[in-house]
Image (cartoon, rainbow over all chains, first blue to last red; front, side, top):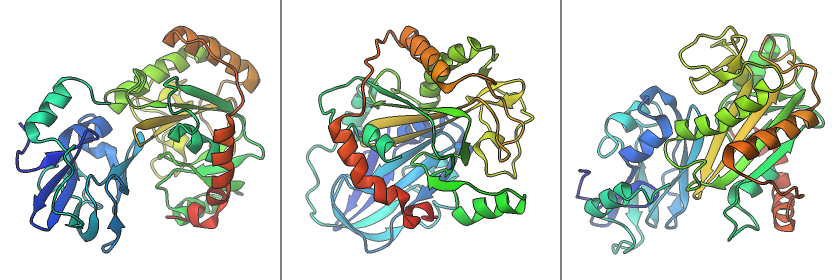
Length: 134
Length: 230
C-alpha cells in the first residue's frame, strides 16, 4: 500500500499538502515504468528554478532513463518554493525512496483546495490494478 | 524534428487513435544530439578526435549523438495507452524491435536484442549513440546497428529509430545493412510492421495541422538556444 497522506494522479505523480505548501513527486510505478527496476537506468533529471509559477498540469521538469525522456507534470498550481537538491546528482533516490527522500519540488499553493480529480491511495491502487493506466 | 514533435503531440488527430509511422532520410546529413547531451562536451570530444562536424541539431529524444547519413530514420507516434506502448518502457522496445529485427533479417542481418552480450562497437568514452548499448538494442555481428529512443509527453509516445545502411567516420565500425536503398528497406519495414501488428498502412503526406505546427516550431528547433540548451 502506498502512503495515504497524499493524493495521486492518473499520470503517476503524487502531491502531499501541508497547509499552504505541497511536495510533488512521482510514484514507484512511474519510476519502474522508466527503468524496469534498474536504478542505474535513470540518467538525467531537470527540475525548475525556485520562483517559477506553475499552473496545474504544467510540465515542471523532465526525466531521462537510458531509453526514454518523459515530462514531469504538477497536478496542482503554485510557485516553486524549493527544489530537492539531491535528485539531479543522485537519481537512485527515486528508485529507493520515491515517496519521501525522492520529493522533487515544493510548491507554495495557489489554492489550498486541491483538484477533486486527484485520487487517494486506495483509489490509486484500484486504478493500477484495473490496468486502466498507460 | 518539428514534424516529429507535431506527431508526438497528435496535432490534427484529436479522435484518431491510429499510430503514425514516419520514414525519412536526411538532406543535408546532420549530427543530432540527444536531448540531455551537453553541446560543449560532445563537440569537444568529436573535434578532439579529429572529426569535422556536419550540421548540428538537437533531438527531443534522449541518448547519444547520431550522424544521420546513410541511414533510414523512423518515428512511430501513438497514445501511451496503445498496446504498442502500454506498460513498462522496456516492453514497448521489445515489441517495436521484434518487428524491426524481422525486417532486417530479410536483408541478411542477423539482428537480435543485445541481451547481456558485450559489443565491439561499445566505447564508454564516446558521445555517439552507436558506441553505447543497452540490453534491448538491436545488434548483429557483435555491433549495434539500430539507434532507438523514446519521448513520452502528454499521454503520447514517439519512438525514434535510426537504421544504419552504412557507417560514417564519426561512427566507425558499427553494424550496417550494406548496399541497399533506404526506399527498399522502407518497403520491407511497412510489410513486416503490417504483419506484426495486423496493421494496414494508409500512405499519406503530413496533415495540414501537422505542417502548420511544424512550421511554427521550425525556428525553435533551428535556434542556437535549443541546440545549446545544455
